[in-house]
View 1 (tube, one colour):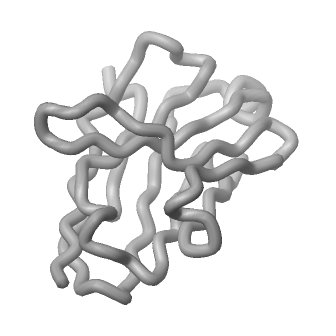
View 2 (view 1 turned 45 degrees about the vertical axis):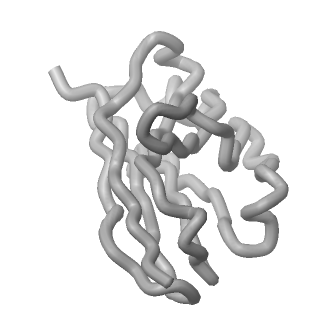
Length: 117
């Protein structure tokens, strides 16, 4: 049973933009609304690194290298969290994963972002 659907990755040139989405189609609305969601990035052979987080109250925090360029947001009615990525850099390349604290042991397949110089 699919717990989440990640999408929006692809190819972009440096300076370009992409928007990632992560939808939880089976999650009860109250659970989604009350959860904290986090985006991570992983390179081959590397650990997953924190990128951005949004709390149930919509407070946000970002990894230093993406501050001012990336924006995390959510649409409770759509059970979806977004990551708007602007001014992309080659070092933003990687597989992006979203994580919901209501599903602490569940990871999706991720969505691949490739940024060329």
